[in-house]
Every structure is written in structure tokens, then in C-alpha cells.
Amino acid sequence: MKVVIAPQGFKGNLTALQVSRAIDSGVRRVIPDVVTALVPMADGGEGTMQALVDAIGGEMMPVEVTDPMGGRVIAHWGFLSDGVTAVIEMAAASGLSLVPLQERNPLLATTYGTGELIRYALGKGCRKFIIGIGGSATNDGGAGMAQALGVNLLDAKGRPMAWGGVALADLDKIDITTIDPRLADCDVLLACDVTNPLCGPQGASCVYGPQKGASAEMVAQLDAALAHYAEVIKMDLNIDIRDVPGAGAAGGLGAGLIVFLKAKVLPGVDIVIQATGLVEHLKDAVLVFTGEGRIDNQTACGKTPVGVARRAKAFGLPVIAIAGEIGSGYQAVYEQGIDTVFSIAPGPISFSQSTEMAEKLITDVAERAIRLFICGRQGRGH
Image (cartoon, rainbow, N blue to C red; front, top):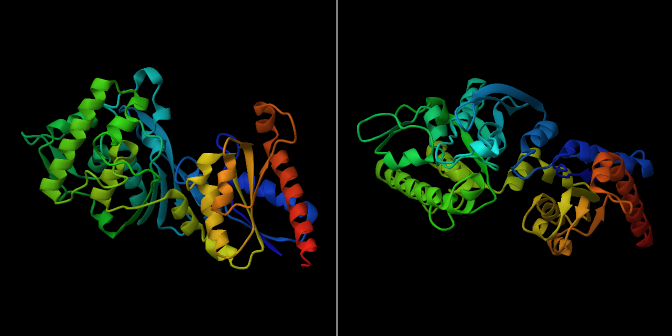
């Protein structure tokens, strides 16, 4: 009997591997000799780097890079065991969490540090990149990243552009002849679950600018600057990026990655499923466990547990989801391939208690779930 265990981490508490091991322990209480495949999952956001390093093997590499406001920060990137794949979370170098509330300024914030992470990974021999772009502090269209990788962004007097989204209003010429030549041999996957274009009412500045500290006036400035950026890209590089779905992700970093690194945009969970070889593990399984910290109506919109469940259903497998918390409308996941949902809460319990005891509670609920599964199989005569 083989059971596939493929949960996401419980954000801010347990990694995907820790959740996987806790589920595995619960299953083994009932079936000690069970064959399990632990496949830590993620959706391209926080935890993706750790999940892939845990699932595939590799190490977290620390490096000092430029933070969003031009200071210095130690950021980590994942160097996978194949020796050619890098996993980068842009938030590690250019994330909102790196900037104190009173210092947030998307007019000036830069993705230069994300470009430095890519450059360091190139130096280690990486030619395949998985890049997650959630949680950005920036609105510079990936211009800083491009500059870190050798692209010349020049004003009308031929001077290099300053960092930050507002500086793009003065962009006159893009010269890519000086871009790092190693990028020509690279395959880049962009983990992106949003479809926002670069500019306009649904674009990077209008939708995400306010949460990065932008006033209404700043939003207008940034949107106009990105629109001008798109015009110069079209004129100099013959790429019409303005309305490409996902171009507006992470303050337009999506656009920069598509234009300068030829990135392919895919839902984050699909990238992780592909990278971890989940489908191969499912082929000879009889049951699948998945889960995340909170399961609610939003989970049904393609989040990790549903992504796992859809693959499992292609093989006709039952799917059990374990959640730290069950929220309103969670029943929507039943339409997406999840057969049942278990909360780890054993009864009335505070959030802090649940967090503190999470591993034990996950193990206990996994034991209950596998016992019910066995009862069901016996009832069907298996």
C-alpha cells in the first residue's frame, strides 16, 4: 500500500516537509510498513524555495545583496541537487517585509537585489531558474533586476537610470547588448498566479501600489512611468508587454522577467508539481494526503491542495486534505477533487495552542483519517 503525502507548509509555523513528516507519523501508527512518498508542495510564494530543496535535495545559499531601498541584506536562494537549478524568491531580496512601514516608498524601491541573486546563481553554474515573485516592495517593472544583469537603461542624455519605478518616466533607450551572456543558455520559469497586466486600472501600480505605501498621486505617477517603460520596450526591443497577463505581478517584475529573461509564466503549484515529479509518485498510489494552513473558499481557486487533487483524480485516487483551520466556504474544494477535509483542532482550542501543538495535532488527525480510509476499503470488500 502506497500513500502519497503532498501538503503545503502551514505558513509561519511548519514547513511543507515538517507537515509531511507529521502526516507520515500518523499513517504509520496504523500501518507501520506502509510505503509513503513525501512530496513537499508550494505555490510559488513564500516557502517554495524550502519545499523544493526539501523535496528534491539541495541547499539554501546565503548571499549579501541590495535590499529594496538600496541598503544591504542577507538573502537566501535554493541551489538544487541537480547542480543546474536555482530557486529564487524575489521577496528574499526585494520583499515588502524587508522595509519598515515608515520607510516604504515604491517610487524608489528597486529589484536590483533580485537581479544580484540571479547573477550569483549563474556564477554557481545554474542555467534553470524557478522564480517566485510574491510579496514585493517594488514597482519598477523589473528594471533594477535588468540593470543588475547588465542591461543599460538610459535617459535622453545617455545616463544610466536611477533605481525605482518613478525613474522610468525618464527612460529613453534600452540597450541589451551588454546583458549577461550566460542568460542566453537559461530556461526561466516564473511562478505567478495573478493575471494583472503591467498598466491600467488592473495593473501593477493601481492594484498593488497602495499596499506598498503608494498614495493616489504616487499610483498615478507609477502607472504612467510603467506605461512609458512599456512603450520604450516596444520601440527598442519589439516586445509588446503592456497587456500580457502576469506582466504586472510583483510591481511589474513579471514584465521584466518576460522581456529580459524570456521567462515562461506558469501557476506556481504547477511548477512545483512538475519539479518534484509528483505525477510519477501518484501512478502506483492508493491514497493522497494534501493540506495547508487554512482551507476555505479561496482554496478552490487553484491553490496547492486543489492542484494536487486534480493530478490525483487523473489516477482516480481519493484525496484527504488536512488544514490548520477550516474557513467559510471550504466545501467548494469538494468540486475540485478533494474528497474530505480534516481540521487539526481536536475541539475548542486557541490559535496559539493550535500553533504550538501543530505537529502532534497533524499526526493525530492523520491517524484518524487513515483509520476511516481503511474502514471504507473494508466496507467495499478491498
